[in-house]
Image (cartoon, rainbow, N blue to C red; front, side, top):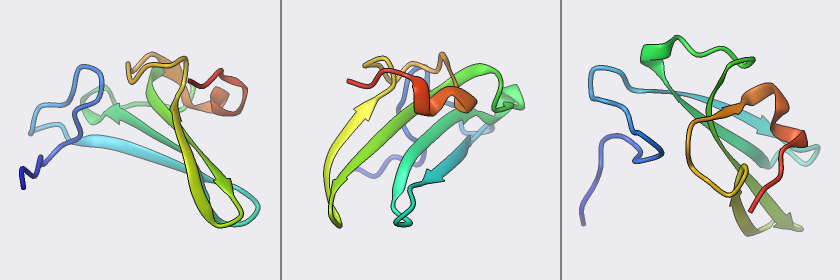
Length: 87
């Protein structure tokens, strides 16, 4: 098994700058949005530096994972996660 120490999303992050992550949960306590930004940017939730993934559930079963705007590129604003399009 090949374990990667850092996620390979968008442009990636060099080892000296691990990712900053953000999480948002739905009313059932399930992870609904997960975001990644390079810590080297001192990312703020209002900056367009986030890769955001949305998780969809059927009951307690995870059924779908989708990227904001259909891409893992770090070009989204975390505060807009709920209003972005996901593919």
